[in-house]
Structure formats: C-alpha cells, structure tokens
Length: 373
Ligand SMILES: Nc1ncnc2c1ncn2[C@@H]1O[C@H](COP(=O)(O)OP(=O)(O)OP(=O)(O)O)[C@@H](O)[C@H]1O
Ligand SMILES: [Mg+2]
Image (tube, rainbow, N blue to C red):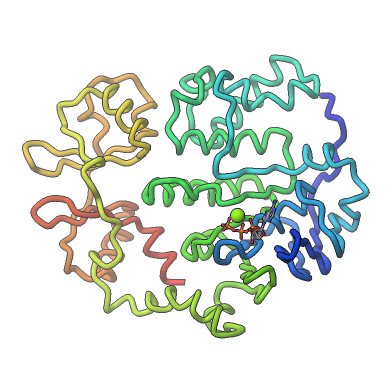
C-alpha cells in the first residue's frame, strides 16, 4: 500500500516545550510545556478563548508557533514536511466538513485514494472503520452526508481521521454540537473505540463532565497559560488555585450521592424523543435522523412501552417498531440515585426512565458513575 510516509508506528511521547503563539498583541498560547505519553488520552480544558484550539493546532502545524518546540518521539515537528506530518496525525473537529457531493466511502477514502490504494483496499478499510464506529457498512457506505444525522456525520468524521491508522489523534470538541443524550452515547462509544485502538489522543473540550469521563489526565488552561495538569482525583483533592477549584467544584457536589434523587441527575426528555408504538420503523428512523437523536421513548395510548435505539433499527429490515422496543426500568423523580444505581447494576441495565405520570427524563448508568469519580 503506497503511503507517502509513515512517520510514527506508535507514539511514545509528545513533548511540548515552552510553546508560545501570539496573534498581534494577543498571546493565545503562553509558554506552555507538557508531555503526553503513548496510549494516553489527555484533555485540554478551559474557558472559551483560553488557547486550547491554538495549542492543539501547533502539534500538527496548522498553526506555526513563535517560540519553543514540539517533539514527537523525540523529533522536532518542524523538521517534518507539514503535509506529511498532517497525514500521520488524525484530526477531528466539530464541523467535520464532509464533502456533500461525495458518498461516505469517498469521504473516508479520500486520502487513501490520493495515496494510490486500490478500490478494493479502500472499500475494505472503509467497511472496517464503519464497523468500529457502529454504522452497518452495507447501509451507510453509499450514503451522502445529507442522508446522515449529526451524530452519524460525527462518526464518519472519526472514521475518516483514523483511515491512515494515525498513532496520534487530535480532537477539537468533536461532540460539542450534539444533543446532550447523543453526546453521552457517543462518549460511551468513544471510550470503547479508544480501548480497541490504543491511540494517543489529545482531546479539547470545555465541558468538565466530558473531561472527567474521557480523560486520563486533564490540562487546564487559562488565558493562554497552563494552570494545572493532573489526574482527575488530583484536581479534586489538590486544585492548584481558586480558578481550578471553581472549575472542579461542579464535580464535587456529586460526591454525596446519597443526597441525590433521580430527578437531580436525569437527562430531561422533551417531545422530540417520543414515538408511538404503531409507527413504521422506516419513518421512525427517518425522524430520528432528522431530529439528530439516537434514543427514543416508545408510548402506547399514553403509556410507556420502553425505549428504542437508532443503531438497533438498522440491524434488520422489520417494519414493526414493537420488535425493537426494549423494556426499561422505571423510577420516580424522588427515588434516591443510589437506589436506582444499585437496581440498574443488579439487572445489568444501562438505561432507565424517570416517570412522573409520563416519562420526564432518562438515567444512563455511565453518566451517573462518571459523576462519582
Ligand atoms: N487566527 C487568529 N487570529 C487572531 N487571533 C486568534 C486567531 N486564532 C485564535 N485567536 C485568538 O487566540 C485566543 C485563543 O483562541 P483559541 O481558538 O485557541 O481558543 P479556544 O480555547 O479554542 O476557545 P473556544 O473554546 O472558544 O474554541 C483567542 O483570544 C482568539 O481570539
Ligand atoms: Mg477552540
């Protein structure tokens, strides 16, 4: 397979040394030093404008910095041809910019094609990647972006970033634009994908929950400076200053689970999530894609029947929506979260519905657990 050049088979270390980037009088990145180790997922966290994107882009040289240096496996990233460097580093952003006139296969296969892969090789690789991001290849390989929901497009963006098997992946708020429930689902999937792939990942977010859920270590930036880089517990126990303490404070209040009820922690449901049990599966798929949701609540005559997942609906051709419904555990808004969690764990359930006359919210076990850290 002709790839112009494989620069790194695996990443042992990305070392950022005293990097500074100025835009006129604004110092977007101010003397930042940090090290990311092979296989680690490092989060860059901080308020808007603190320099996260700029720092991330200095690594693949979409931004040329003014001072300092960046070593990848001990080699200065300015010694590489920037185009070859970028082919070796996966990059995922919020507006992933799929080409609208191209199919999923063509979008993912763009770089391999330029690299001279054969059609058969491209198809095989695209299928493999679609499996990894939970989109059945036979259903998706020939679609165009407008036939995909935002969550599906984001998965394609991830697949595209991985097509050249980069050992380093840079991700800039990849789930930032998604509906909150979908966002949580994609985060969960992403944790699994991450384990399968064992890549080194630098991931930008300004969402503390996302940072704690996904990160091995978290680097917190403020006004271009790195304030603290530590493991999650360290941030909670030993925040470097009041700024960090404020940021992690929202996590602390979840430490006393026994005081919390399901309604404190549920993700509220609005009407877009509701479907009637006699709807046809095809129409429900179309509607979920249009609304950009991947989980739905199925009702019959005002009563809760259970929930459906978009991914399941694709698995077989069956017009009858009822065959896809999963029964869910049900809790009341004032039930304690500790009780809900232990019952869900006992039954091995990941999803439960909070009902007050009608369903008002959902509980996801991983979401609850991530708040316990
Ligand atoms: N091309 C540019 N020209 C001028 N100033 C820029 C440029 N890119 C970024 N900046 C400035 O640099 C600072 C850091 O921007 P950056 O995009 O890195 O922040 P961020 O932490 O990613 O923010 P957000 O969370 O909003 O994405 C900001 O003050 C921004 O206005
Ligand atoms: Mg940014």
